[in-house]
Image 1 (cartoon, rainbow, N blue to C red):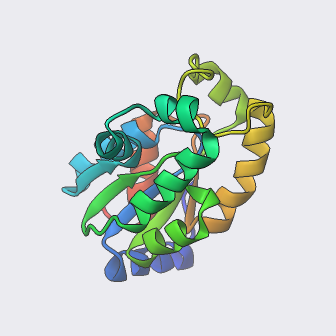
Image 2 (image 1 turned 60 degrees about the vertical axis):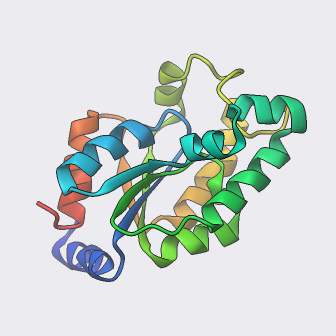
Image 3 (image 1 turned 90 degrees about the vertical axis):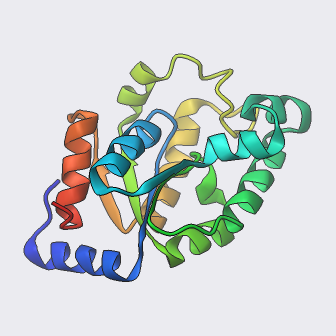
Length: 183
């Protein structure tokens, strides 16, 4: 997706006021991998909030869910992200961050939010560890239902949307950089 000139100017304006790039999207959308590549290309630091949560909690996301449930994982995620205060970072968020309006508002204060929009079919091909990956969802909720529920929230919080089905991770980075005039 390449933006028109007015949209590109508006997106570039985000970067002048906001130093972070916040990647949101479903598990398997490429947030962590694209985040690392983007950090290298833009000379930003990188933080993966799933790894940050695991480091703070001293256990995996799945272990949190197994012992305390998916809502507790979401609470921990919201608390950790509301306390994240960084500048000039690429921030790869967990897929469930969008359930916390407070966390999202905090991230958006200093960051441009980029939704990596990938189809359900593509995600199914990429995610092989759905049951053990630490995805914060209701026990009876299917991946398709989770996808539909979250897609609305990702769109709500996105400053920029990148359709990632037909592109490599490098191409997605190129599109993000073009949108933000970071070339």
